[in-house]
Length: 461
Ligand SMILES: *[C@@H]1O[C@H](CO)[C@@H](O)[C@H](O)[C@H]1NC(C)=O
Image (cartoon, rainbow, N blue to C red; front, side):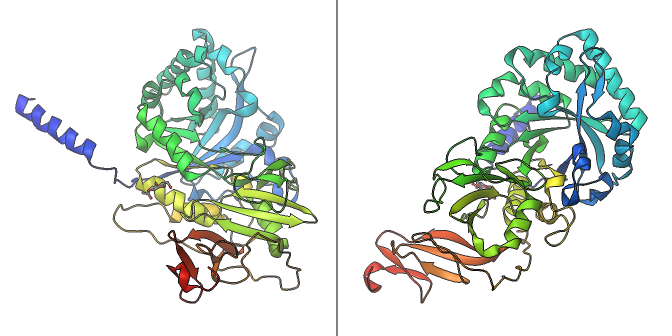
């Protein structure tokens, strides 16, 4: 290459660095996690591999596998279900055009990684057993979901990836890795090296808030999620390789008082259990939608102005619960945002939390909204899909709380206390919901013209 060429290239590189990111992602990934154990649930909580709509996923991920502590080979979490009941064969048969992957590790199966990855012979045995498994059951790849990587594991993780790379050399197997959202632990990861080995990095941008904290908040707010993604990018991962996780579940809290139900207000514990997830502090989307549709007037649904976060307050008896969740609108905005930013796509936690049976409407409303709102073109704005609102139940008693605004019809309404504050009430997935809006200082919201005007023009303001 001539020197002149090099100068020209250097100039181009400088220009490229100055131009803001504006490349929509070409082929966004939708990485759909599937929890095998939902087979053992009852009713609508149960799900089988053939119920996965693989037209909505580019990757389907079967969870979880571990590592045998004695042999260092791949270990099945539930051999009876997976092998004897042919669950993994059914899973691969259902894959359609998606890539079928297994995830190794997760919260309960990660312990052995540190030991196996720390020894060349163990790594070799492990990787060989994985390749044999993939070949025998016709899978397309693996996710390394090693949770809790410590500083001492940092180099061994790279050795392990290198081993898989070696074993996968003459195959078409894919490899992805799941990495945490906690920025404090990022130093344990050699991001540039990891990036070279994997097809994509699944960033667990979930649970920024939850019932372990004693105040209510948005569980997976987009600005925080993007901050985490950007942190990985800054450390050397190309945006196109970074996939952002989104929850298909709500984080839930019991509020300390029904009178204080805003973001940042106090909570005393996790919210009441759902019938399938059976755990305080969490509700799958399909549990949540049934709960809201069962008594819509007991819910007050509030959306943020950027359309990327929504929460619901549930009143029952003298108690109130706060649910931070994702719906078709927040996920549409997130899908559009990440692809506009040039990120690789989204990962779905998890398929069984979605309304996969269509209990509350059409099947897989959240996944549809994601896939339909990816930005495939950086210039055209993709319209946001909306679902017709459910019919309200007129018989139910409406309980209003003094000092807490609740929508009763579509429109814009001035706050009773602060004239510059008003509420935009629109129909959402589950009925009326409000967004808080503010006028400029010294202004008041005029309910007749729907405009902010000089405060003196409104009597009482
Ligand atoms: C994505 O969301 C962030 C945070 O809400 C926002 O600042 C940014 O402008 C959005 N980007 C696009 C391309 O929509």
